[in-house]
Length: 248
Image (tube, rainbow, N blue to C red; front, top):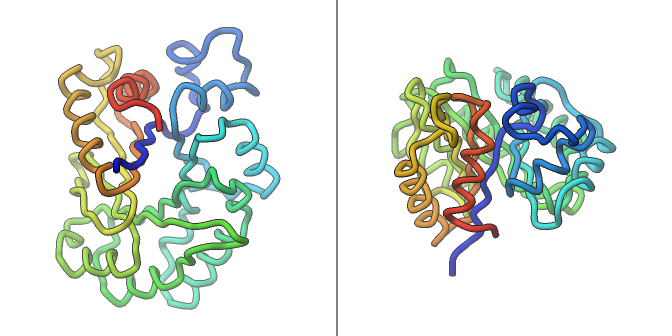
């Protein structure tokens, strides 16, 4: 049985999208409602820089369709801590800060590490041990985004599999990471959209991504986001790919 494939964008407030994505009649306050009807998932990026309140997360959840999902980037302070005690404190602080008010619409949390962070078994073993499987009755799934060649080893893959954490697939040439099947979901960040293409990617490239994600979905739920690249084209890229794989 195939698992859901959810495709979307990073955030929903980006000024060029007022020209390329949002109709004139959609006001700023209505952007999330409109965007969530066009795509099937959104990665919340703003939480990487500042946390949000429980009330804000609940409001966002209430503005989106029933089968829609968010993923959330954890606050950047959580992935730069040096001591075990500081790691646990910062993870607990973020998890307890309101994100579970998204309820069933919380698909996963992306813990993005800086590219200067190299693989260290003790460090990542400790970090992953602090990631809870649930909080306030809400299931939590964790994706680890690393951007350093030292993570291309079996020990890291085994550690992620042991903790049930997904490894974020990235097609950025500066820090590429392959798809590693380590959890019950896959998390992809597609970063090669181009401004000279209306849908960001060539039709053949979107066809290929459709086949790839469909293959992943045979064993895992899939989240895929068009991030970075020519951001003004990313909503069109997401809609075009949804047209190829369907809605969950």
